[in-house]
Length: 289
Ligand SMILES: Cc1cc2nc3c(=O)[nH]c(=O)nc-3n(C[C@H](O)[C@H](O)[C@H](O)COP(=O)(O)O)c2cc1C
Image (cartoon, rainbow, N blue to C red; front, side, top):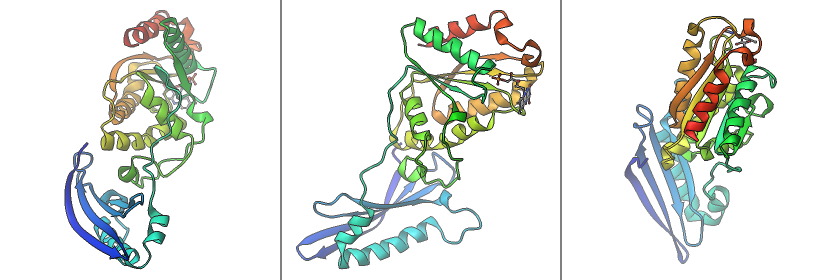
């Protein structure tokens, strides 16, 4: 994404023999979210990594005093003063190399297995998919959100400033795995009509990947499959979870390419007894890898 950018202010600050620059830009991110405006303050100087202060309007919740614009303008005023007095101190505090999510070993197929039960029906679905990938000579990795350290999203919207999350936990490697995959599969049981809590953590924290993709024009060639198991009988038990997972794939910019939904799991107990399901999974995976 290349946001519409407007230069609000530019300062040139000579200090001894050196010239420092401070610019304040207003970027319009309404193509991401209605009314989202980002303010980017940048200080540059000879031989220094640039220092940035970035803030966007969505960071300021309704009851919070102040605004992104006032924070950016106030910071510009402070930085202008600091650059004139002690530029080294300002760059020491605020200059950063651009941060990106860590990348892990890429697998062709990444499966997010949403059940807390590693030996349940969703895990069986995941295993069928892994076997299909291996049979096709491709690599596969399974992520178990319940085994990971993933802090809930706090809605700070700072990922739209930097493309990364404020939390440094296991979600970085989940994002790296998804970023590198050709095919992403979510296998999930239905819990109270939707996904279990551990998977919901991953879904919400993927907002940082949405930000990363939106700000850096991420790939658009990835496909997704949706596999789900419901205890009760009837297709209607999948109504909400389908919407949740379609929303998830939409956030990731990944094209949904199929599903396998198995109801009555509480009665069937073991989905390996349901004819045709393993074959359905294997056919889909083979077609998409
Ligand atoms: C907390 C909880 C909530 C559940 N909610 C639903 C539900 O809303 N609808 C449904 O059909 N089954 C529900 N179930 C049943 C599970 O979907 C079913 O047992 C499923 O096979 C479990 O998948 P797993 O073997 O992969 O863990 C629930 C199970 C649990 C533990």
